[in-house]
Length: 527
Ligand SMILES: C[S@@+](CC[C@H](N)C(=O)[O-])C[C@H]1O[C@@H](n2cnc3c(N)ncnc32)[C@H](O)[C@@H]1O
Image 1: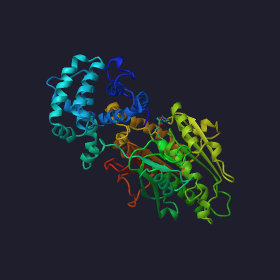
Image 2: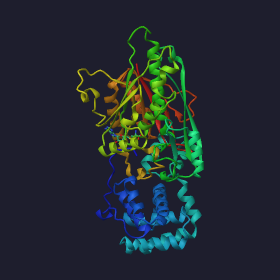
Image 3: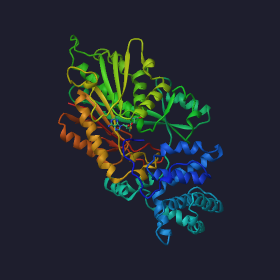
Image 4: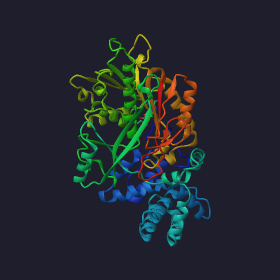
């Protein structure tokens, strides 16, 4: 989940709503929901909840928690319409919402849903509310389909977010807001340095895990400074969509790095920036006299907000694969004109030390740590740095004599409001506030402003967010280009099989329940 956005505190909650894992399954889920309302993220409380339960209860607890979060705001509206007087106690509201989910979405038998939820109210020491809890749940149980329809009618988002989405996506608004209430499919990325997507699909078949191959096509027009530039570059990205979410330890050879869990739209980042970089190398070699020794066989790339390393690992997989996706192979495809890349220096930064550790763990599982990356004739040097991308400068790091730009390509998978991944992290619709949009957009602008001077002329920067708000995406890019006259927006072509064309870049919206998350992509070149 995107980091660095301050979680709001719900002042109505008492300190006692800290996560205490005892009591019935429903009580534990209610306590977990209270902790989330008190500012904790789902990812920080889910494991403690599940680990506290017997195996037989984990599935129900998971469904109860996630479904309650997905339907949270719609349930709150329904609750307000059902109560004669406003219910202010957060604990009571949460308990009733957990009861409503069982009746309306999880097909729990009425008597069990009502009885166990009333018992839960007693257990969390809100016995005075049992009459109210009982009365509301009984009323709903008499006509669940009517109340379900009522609940489903509108969005399940905070009003400020629904309003903003209406402004940004009026045409897609209904589908989009309904799409955000659904669970997201599980996608896998297959390590192309190890096996093919087709072979891994067979391996999954053998493990009785059904999966479809998903292929996304991307086209963009590369730089316009050479003959090559006029051409459109196309690439295809293949991943797997599982028919059902599966525990990773059930996936064949997961522990040894053959596959990773990664949203399909997140799998676009590494191939796009990698292909843009190849275009740069080819364009440069075309402009270099073959007798001159100007050609440089060392390149520098930067992953500016890298943790936990999903896109970084993907990029390293492409670079180290023994096929045309590797930058080391550019020469073989274009023997006459292309430079022979022998050294690739990779810098990855992130400002959160514990998340930096996650990068190291992920790279280790995928056999992409520094010692794994050495190849016979080529070298990949990996430098992972804990630093603030609004201030970090490579020349300060190296105490270099000059502050010349050094990077040929930068991947900026920026911190954002993460509104495009609400399906996977439904707690976002509780934790985010309207003020976060402005604060995040400023942070993104600061990072862009600091990194841009470090990109070489002719180099590419791929700007990525998992937000569906225009202020963080197309408007951010328009503002950036207005203030940086050496920034050229690279045009994605109609060949793109993903996303919606924007004035700059493309926006994916999580509308279709089989599709990937709400990512935004913009590719910039420094002229
Ligand atoms: C969207 S996540 C990156 C995901 C990562 N690229 C991946 O594919 O696994 C954004 C990251 O930006 C980091 N971040 C937030 N503010 C930052 C800053 N000022 N400097 C550097 N990193 C920052 C967060 O810690 C978070 O790990």
